[in-house]
Structure formats: C-alpha cells, structure tokens
Image (cartoon, rainbow, N blue to C red; front, side, top):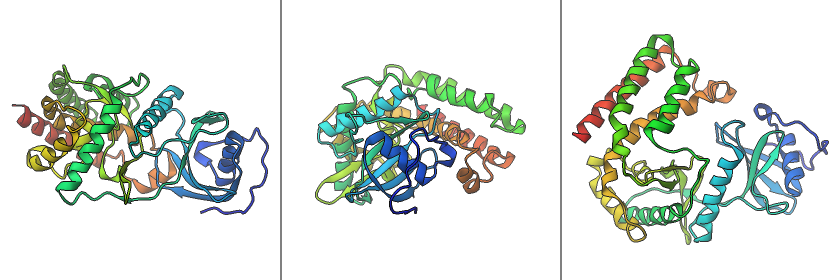
Amino acid sequence: MYDAGELEELPLNVSADFEHLVPDIMLNLVEQSTGLKMTGLATPLPSYINRVYEIQTMDGNRLIAKFYRPGRWSREALHDEHDFVADCAAEEIPVIAPMKLNGDQRLHEADGIYFTIFPKRYGRQLEINNDTDWLRVGRLLGRVHMVGSRRQATARTDLHPKQSTKEHVRHLLDNGYVTPRYTEEFKKITDLILDLITCLFEDIEFIRIHGDCHCGNLLDRPGEGIMIIDFDDMMVGPPVQDLWLLLPDRADKCRRELDLLLRGYEQFREFDDRSFRLIEPLRAMRIIYYLAWCSRQVNDFKFRTTYPEWGSDAFWQREVTDLSLQLQVIKEHIN
C-alpha cells in the first residue's frame, strides 16, 4: 500500500511505463485525465495482465483504477467491453460500470496506456450451496445474455475454433513458447482437436457473453442479489460458455445443476440445448487460451516469480498430456 498524503505535482507530460507504473505516476495520470483530486492512497489489487489499484478521492470516495496492458486490447475492443457493461447496468443488472468523467469519458489514455475508473463495490464471492443459488445464477445469466444479444461487439474475440483458438495455437508456435522437444506433439494434438471440433460450432448462435463466468466473478451482495464483475475477457461466443465454467464437474455428472441453471435462465431467454455438445470442446479451447494468455505475461516479473516453471520441458509435457486426455473426452462425448 502506498500513502504519501498529498501527491507531489508531476509535469503534465510525465511518461507512463506500464511495467513500472509506480503509485505516484499512476495517481497523477488519474488526476490529469479525469479531473479528480486524489489522496496518496494506492493499494494494488490482484491482477497479472493489467494493473489495478484501489484509490481514494480527497472527499473520501474509494475507487478502482484499472490500467490495461498495452497491446492486448484496441480502443474499440475496450469500448465494446464498456458498452456491454453499460447496457447491463441500463437494464438494472447488478454490474460495476465504468464511471463517466471529464466530459463523459469512460476510457482514458496516457502515453499509449488505456485506463478506466470504477466505483468501489463490496461483496463476498458467491458460494453456490443449494438449488435456489443455481436458479439465481441462471436468472442472472439469462438477463445478461438477453442484453448481450441486442448489439454486436465487432472488435472482440470470436470464441470459435478456427478463429480465436487457431490464432492462439499459431501465437504459441510462431513465437517459440513451446519448447523444441514438444513443438511437434503440441502442433499435432491441437490440429487433431481443431479438426474434430470445428464442425460442432456450425449453426450455433454467437452473442456477446461474459466469457470468464466462474464463481470468482460473481459477488453476493445482501439486499441486491448476485453481481457479475470483471468483463475484461468478454467475447462473442456461444451462451453455453458462461454456464459450463460454473459446474463443479463435467456436464454429464452435473445434470441437476445444469437443469436448475436452465430453469432460471429460461425465465428470460430460450437456451439452445444443442450447444451442450460444445462444453468439452470449449474446455479444450480454454486450456489453449490460457496457455496463450500466460505467454503474453512471461516477461512480467510478478508472473515469472509466481510461475518459475512455466514454459519448461516439464511444463509442456504436462500440457500436451492434458490436451491428449481432453481429446479423448471430446471423442467420447460426441460419439
């Protein structure tokens, strides 16, 4: 935590270095871009890919400043995220929408770094303990997807094997993240997976979805219901993506939980049962996505310290084995 009382005034042309975004520079950038006057409070919050701080205005309001890693999202893609959250807020869905500041701007830029400011909201991570909880989550997702289906997000990732997943594989191979010992095996197993699953996505509805809807992104706020947070990975994809991540086991072992989710969901929106066939393919796609996500952080000191073995021969041996096992699961579920 950083607390230096009143900020030392820095010149307006101060340079922002994302890898060394120290609190005094970060706070001055917030002040200069938003017009808010800040105290010296700057508490870093857990986030590998972005830089996120809890900050405080001079009148005592706690805010969250989120600085996006350069090169990850375009301005248009970030506007897609903020538009989706704002659309949900307009329908009174519990979300945390970016604040409009300094001329109604939600997205700010300094030295090529985009950032936004959110109000601070409290809540505890949702624990799904009973049938009522599953119904509540289903209703929430039905409402979110009802909003998500109303407009496009043209700058966002398409969660499709021949688009996003194929690009993730190419990124890992072309940039040498897979060690030479396992490059051929990784290419072979990912080619087999993509060849097998691509046809399953034909005639499936694609809409704006949260994309990373696990319980860590659901907050239970007494008196307000369940709040869905962190739309950083929002994408365009099949609605089932936002359901399967919540399940405690594979879908064939969670029929009761799925039935309850859908009972709540379909109070607001119809669900295409054919998309259940996508759950295991989506699991494989998420493994590949996560590998690519991590690869973009390998030069981050915090990441290297936390995951020192990432990218080693032993690491890739495990990943190739996991993907091979997942391929067998996919074959069992689609036959």
